[in-house]
Image 1 (tube, rainbow, N blue to C red):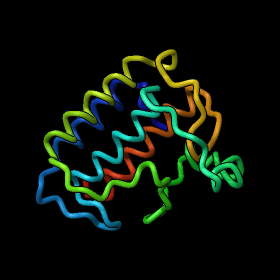
Image 2: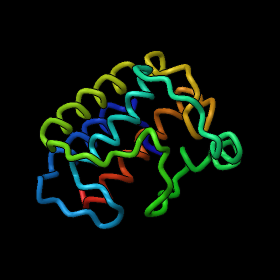
Image 3: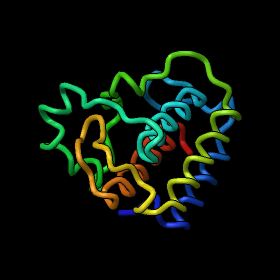
Image 4: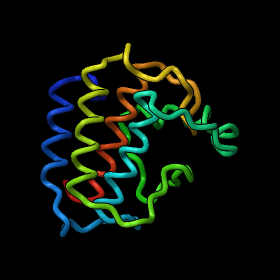
Length: 149
């Protein structure tokens, strides 16, 4: 499984981010490309430790049972549930959101396991830095695939 700590993987993600345009059409889901990038940045804010979010009720119940889905090789299913704190419904500027996510991706990647949050994931709970690295790659990959990038 790829990890966002790997510089080649981070570069791959950034190239895929750069392929998005305001006209990029989603293949599933409700968000447009700008909203998706803002959603991914909100998740990265938690991963780098800028925001600490409370555990969701559903996450407390089943998060530990499905934690392996955050880091295993199996792609996430389309239209998977999203924690309310990561739902983006207002309009967002694609270029602004891409720049923000690119900076967060670089920060996470270059910070390595030592720069990762020590707080639990809002749904999956306590994760190791290695799990965060794999999971954040998997999250970004999922949403870039959502837009054919």
